Length: 262
Image 1 (cartoon, rainbow, N blue to C red):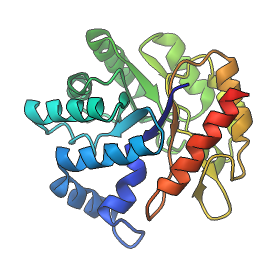
Image 2: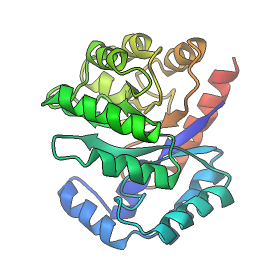
Image 3: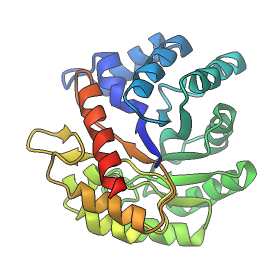
């Protein structure tokens, strides 16, 4: 049972981000102040909630700027807190992305894969570059549906790319985004279950992001669909919002344990 969380859950809290602050400003503030020592404290908080895996969002992983010594400190922290690195979330891939640099840095961290969105502009040449980088580093890229206006988001389109580049491109279904965009999240996960390499499991209630099993999504059915299909990746929780995410994440971890045990 691989239970994990993506570190971006904590960025609202750690950057004092709110809707009145442009994300670019908050991200810059976060980037300037973040250190491997602060990441070590964050990993301790995550491990205390009962998770065994963490997906590092690129901001909490140093934005590809940390030195070899700093990367070594990250790997030491993971070992010390008995956490395994599930993936390196690069945010997304666009025409200007340094795909080789992202994959190379992920390998330095010890990540088994990269995750993020894929722009719907110049998609085919970008997919080819992803596959080449994957071949070089023996890694896959899990496409997160991040909104169909600007990214590859429909299950059939993700599935087509995964079939074209088997072992190098897969799916990282974000259940909350599917729901918010009017796509049936259970149907989407069912369509992607055979090519899912990672997950961003979000539940949504009337206010916003909430603990798994406490919102409008059929999270139990979604999780069991993946399990019954032989999914071997991490069940990775994502929560968005201000304040300490720990209570929501802890309840989500307990929900996954109970659901997967049935």
